[in-house]
Image (cartoon, rainbow, N blue to C red; front, side):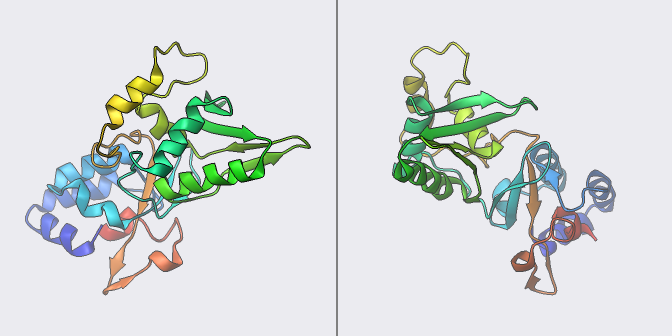
Length: 220
């Protein structure tokens, strides 16, 4: 989110600046997607204006999950198709963790298969670091919440859910275009993001720290 755009918007409506400051108080550089949506609506800014300035995403329970997300998430690509196939195949699926968050997992006895799925997820969503657990016979990969949430929102069922022909649902929702997760705000309103702050023309993104480089900094 560029400081100049916010300053211009809030200078025309000082009360909106006070409201925005209140909305971002004590966020430590993080803001939920729902809060960011309301803030942009309040200031009359379009969602696309901050797409390139979102530098990290986390889950509703906190923590960095994806750095430099690749908005908009595009599942209508070879990498996206690989993710969908993995989630619907015998080696993968979606499950609810103990916090009630949707997670995507993939298991295989072939290391190259695991690496292909990890690279596909990075290609679609950004720099993520999944948890990999290895046994003598196979590797189990657990992906960040944003991956599972995105796959769930295009129609892939969570384990235990009844789903009639989920692949047909996914094809209809993804279609021949893209899964535009950010512009339709379909990454879940509780998902947290941190936004690049630009001050004095210098970007702080290269030395990103959750407590210093976030949406709140643009309003100081």
